Each structure stands twice: as C-alpha cells, then as structure tokens.
Amino acid sequence: MFMSEYNHTLDTKGRLIIPAKFREVLGEEFVISKGMDGCLFVYANDDWNAFEQKLTSLPLINKEARQFARFFLAGAATVEVDKQGRILLPAHLREFAGLEKDVVLVGVGSRVE
Image (cartoon, rainbow, N blue to C red; front, side, top):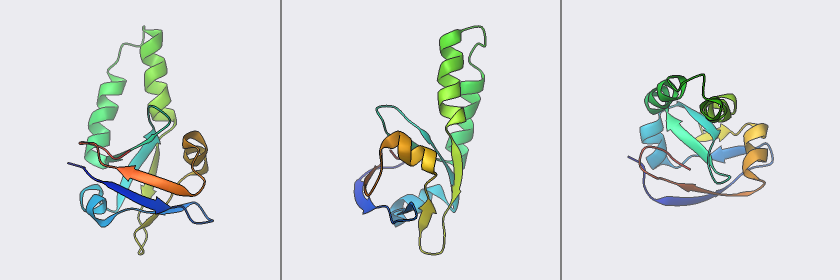
C-alpha cells in the first residue's frame, strides 16, 4: 500500500528519483501510465497486470469502454530503476502531465500518482 507525499525534481535528462519507500513496493521495474486529472499513475507490475485485465475485459462493443482502455494502455510505459534510484520518465508522459522540473509523488493506496 502506498501513502505519503514526496517532493522531487526532474533532472535535465528527464530522470526522477523514486522514494525508497515506494521502490520497496514497486521493485526495480514497474509501469507508469497516463492517469486522471492530469496525473500519471504508477503501478507495481502485479497491480498493473490486474488493472490491465480489467481494462481488456471491458466490452469491445462499448465505444466509451474502448476509449477508456485505449487511454491507459496506449499511454503506458515500463520503466527501470537505475543504481541511483532514478527512472527515465518518458517524454510523452512528461508532456501529458506538464512536468518540467518540480514533481510531487503521492501514495494513494494501490498506486502512486
């Protein structure tokens, strides 16, 4: 379970330090996707797989369900933590969330925003 709030900054290459408390749960590789309210959603692989199964089980006949699944799945990326505890945040996700320098990481239960 994720909780707490951490303030960090992106470096000039788009790398972000992931707090140690979050890395303990996320592991060395995890998924970041577009989220709601202009945020990014960060999931441990097991939680992402469960979320992905829910998305892919939505009815294909429903246009809104297709758009909802497309939003999350097309915007997702797997990232790896380097030896300094940083990830390279993909440019399309930085742009989506309007991240240029200051970043707030917030634990909200099953994910980080």
